[in-house]
Amino acid sequence: MRKRRSLVGLTAVLFVAGATTGVAEDVHSTKVQASAGLQLPIRWQPVNDGVSLDADILRPTRCSLTGDLVTAAGTFVGFVSQFYLRVGDVVELYVYSAPIAGYPSGIQLAVLSEEVPPHIPGGQGGSWLVKVPIDLTLGYHPERCGVTVQATHQFEGSGNAY
Image (cartoon, rainbow, N blue to C red; front, side):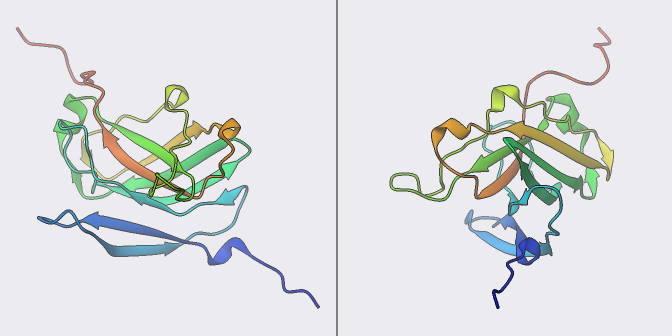
């Protein structure tokens, strides 16, 4: 009798950057349910654009691969400052291969030029959904997802009063 394998055991882990050391620590994990497409682990990544506030307002809940399209979803946690809106911040989705020689974090497979990331609204709570195609011609399979906050510098608020 053959054992059946299931994707139900996959776990998405959320990491939070340490306050002074930059070391990530596991603060939340959630079970990912297998549904349409392959479920991938997902976590939020620290912001590195030099403008945006922390990405710890993001709580990713799922990331799935269907064909060459990766979809991630989650919620905003707590109060979201209007600053995110003022610099035109969006939720950016990255998709990585397994680590390979010279690339310990894996190869980034998402075709970001074709992504339509959601803008981050100010206020309390809410949800987000982002989709991005991946480049299958690179010959690597997606292994994990990461989301962060990325500034577009496209002001999304009201017009200038002057």
